[in-house]
Length: 308
Image (cartoon, rainbow, N blue to C red; front, side, top):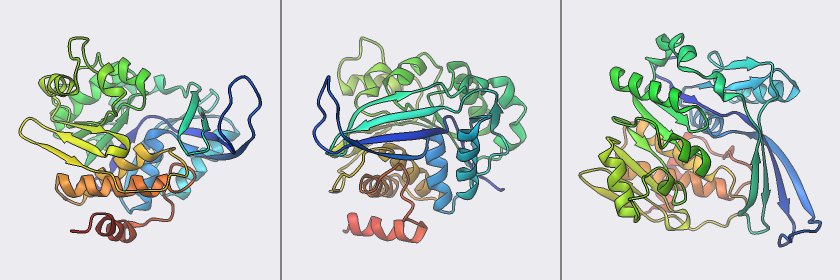
């Protein structure tokens, strides 16, 4: 595999409970249940593979039936798993309750043994890591491993992207040395916990992250779209209209779309448009992957959503 995108982080079994009516507290709620393959890094790898981008996934799978099922889905999607770890631990699970309007009510995560992805382990894989066109890492891994990856990618001129995932892991990696990082992709809840208490406004928080040496900060703002900040310019783009069926994986899809576009040499504005288009398509299906899209269909949809 030449110049793959290498994704490092969670591969999970997603159990999604969709409420059939407005959720009520302290009583029984009727739901329908879907099971799918999940995990931020796995989702991004899966979507990129469907778009004909070569991908490697470094994750941890349990030595159990769930792990076997999850690995087979990855293999069927064209994801390379040579560098992943199989451990004598239960496979990680993500359980979410989805409101009847498609928004998340709450979610639960069980440990996916990602502590096994250590700098020492990655050091044994540097020959393949050094071939990456992009490295994508989710914040479920340790700060120590994040620091190693930032240093490694700086030395090897590889673009590293960090997806904060959610507030707790974002808060954890706030302590990491992010000097030289190519891109971090927080949403409006994650941005404040990445920063010091002195940075109170969005403007101050962005300025602080750029001041720490991060090259690009991409702020996801839900229905309001997103903004890509760098020291020399700011790009803002509205989100297209979409009828939300399930919010699961929309953020992962957005990052997938951005990487796909940059992999093909597109500029930041085109990449934001592609990111929003893929996210909008995922919002309209159950699960975290737009399995109905290929490279050609996605490019066509970008022109549809963002016609000049």
